[in-house]
Image (tube, rainbow, N blue to C red; front, side):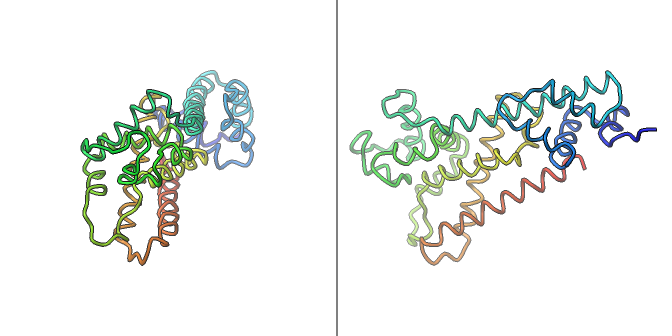
Length: 268
């Protein structure tokens, strides 16, 4: 008699709700050598859900319509995250356009929120942009690295974590080494978060969510990563700005480990 797989046993016993079942299937696909091709297929743009369902059913299940229907829901949840990952990547690759009115409005909102509506000299091209952490006079140059996604996430953190933003940007610290280019850091945190998405180590907090909730969850993860870097930077015995890259890389390595552990601990 064929031995039931762990997933099949849970499904047939009705022991898991849809969210728990989706996470369990996700972990099995991620870790199973036998299902490595399925895991690879699930991470491609517009995955073939019917073929994936058929392959998993043949490898892990006996006949059973109820099991197949349940599996289909789990697979759809995982594919929804895949679709979201590619939307994020596409937005990161969409360049900031200084002639686009919507882009310019978002950039101005970031300035106004970050500075509490200070007047900026020089208009679109201005050395004042450096006050909030752009490295040059033209924001478009820094935003090339993170695209519209970085712009959106800078706006989000300005809107939702005002105390954190103002504390860093408006502080009058005597020790210059305790400061950092705030906007630039926000852009590279966006890129780090996108890499985590591509690695699929952020799937667990996204699985089972609708698309608007995924956007919010991802933006919150971005904010948490940004604040984690800030805490590491201001608490470390920094000798000079030359220590910036090392501090950032160590912080992101810690964040990566946290999300890997979260995924491993989910469901059990």
